[in-house]
Every structure is written in structure tokens, then in C-alpha cells.
Length: 397
Image (cartoon, rainbow, N blue to C red; front, side, top):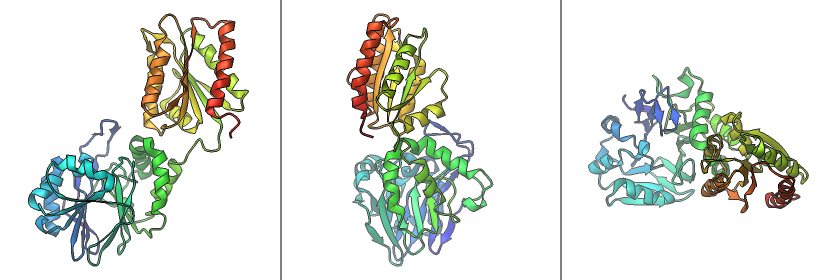
């Protein structure tokens, strides 16, 4: 597909990938996708992002329609993931003196992408690039969804180039959102849920950087460009990335229990935490939908997970739950682990290690009871919950 003009001397020079059905291993792309890149021409010329390596020749042809590649002055690298950086080396082959501009955290990534000497400048918030009649203002947007992510605002044309932010996977006849005939709200949310949601804590702290821009167009790196209601999905991101646990004092208790023993401990955990002022929910993970579990994780001040030990391990439904923690923002969330066991009791320990590994704050002691919890063990559980409640911040809300 040929280059498409967005405004005076601003062009889309990306490519379409309508046959793509799986993206980043983790998400379906039934509607395909695009790899969007842009050319901005002033007295000097800037190319914003490139495309997936397999589409390099088509991409270079689109760029050459507007300007010979060797005459491009700047290549702006908003994000080093291969679907956006795959053609950087091809650009360097044709324009070895081009100046590469990226966020400061992106510099080491970019060096490992190109594996050659190049003129690289890492920039920080509010750095400006004057192209002569066109002015770009840069904003670092770390962990949206990589630490290197950057956006820029083209002042004269009021275009915000957002890389992966606010995008959707879609490849159709048009590149403009106001001309598509799909449920775009669903596709943008689905992209956010799969790609951005694990970084919501970072994203909500950075979105305010965009508040002062007078935006007429949002041009991302995938899917349609927003010419009408350009702030719609910026505002949606504020809603979706909000801290769902803020102002709450809830502890979600998750468990799996074959013979009711770990379930008995779960009940004791929930009742004990209530005495310390927490609201609680008791959730059998064998019956819990993944979407509901993710909402519970995000809306809880802390979580408690109970697992029996089977063959020296936690049971699969518990691991399925644990694997969901990395699909939402759970860094720094407090947690504790408990369970009934027969002899080894390794299950609780392994779950605690995994939660610690994904940067959750796990209480140092796991509570375990052998087989059927005795009266003495249930009394010990009460004492454990007293200490756990203090760790969770009882009385501080």
C-alpha cells in the first residue's frame, strides 16, 4: 500500500499485515494488524518508527514515494520491539549518517538492535526537535509497555504519535478510525488487556503528561489513526488504568482444596482478617473465571493463596491463578501463602517463591497444617492472622 497523507507534509508510510493471527504469542489477532510509521517533512525530515523486518521492502518503497531514504535526517525510535524496529538496519544501510533519536532508557536497547556504530541521542521529557516549520516535543512513557517507550507531539499539526499507546490490532481498507466498521472500543480494550494491563501502575502515573497537548489526531503504531474524538482512548486509558484498590480495605482469599482441609484454613483466614477491619472474599480457584480473578487481584489491598501439596508441588488450578498475577499490575502487592499437606508440604513454599519472583511483597512465614487441621493448628492460625493483619496494614486505612 502506498504512502497516505495525514496533513501538510505528514505521511503514513507503514504497512499492513492482514494475515497475522497471533501477536506476541499471547493474543489473537483475528483482524490482522498494521505496523504504522510516519514521515514528517520540514526543512529537515524525520521518520517516526519502522516496521517488522519481513515487511522491509514494502516499507522502504512507501518512504521513497515521499523522500529518498538517504535524505532523511532523523529516525525517531519510539520503541525497540521488533515489530517497530525491524527495518532500522535497512534504513542505516541506505542512510548511515542518519541521526537516531530515542528515549534515554532506550539507548542500550537500540544499540543491541542495530549492533553497529550509529549517531544515537537519548532524550528526556520536553526535549524538542525543530525540523524547520515542524516541531516535535518528546515525552517518555516508560512501561507503556516497555521501559523505552516514547511519544512525541507535532506542534504545528497537533498530531500525537503514541507508538503502542491507545492502539488496536486491525488491518482493513482504511487507516482511519472514523471509517472502520468494527467494534473498535472492544479491539482497543482487548489490546490494552493483553499488552498494557500488566503495567497499569506505571501508565496511570504517566498519562497526565499528555493533558496539556491540544490534540487533533492520535497516530499510533498499530491499527487505525484517530482523527475524530482523538482523546477518547486517552480518557479510556485513565479509566482502565485507575487504581482499583484505592480506598478499599479488601483481602481476596484464593484457595484450592480436594478434601476440605485447605478450605478450612481459607475460611479461618477470611474470618480472622475480618476481625481486623478488612473485608474479605473467599474464592475457590477451581470455579473462578480468569477475568474475575484478575479483577479481584487488582481491587484487593492484599491477597492470600492456599494450596495443598500434591507430588511435591502446588496444584495446577493454583498455578493457573498465580500465572494471572503477571497479567495485571501486581508489583508491590502484599500476599501470604498457606495450605494443608501430608508430608513434604512444598506447595506453599513454591507459590511464595514465585510471587516473590514477580516482585510481590510476600509475608515471610507460610502457614501450614498437616492433613486435617487440629484445634491447636486453628488456634495457631488465629495468631498467624493477627501478625498477617498487621503486615497488611490493619488500622492504617
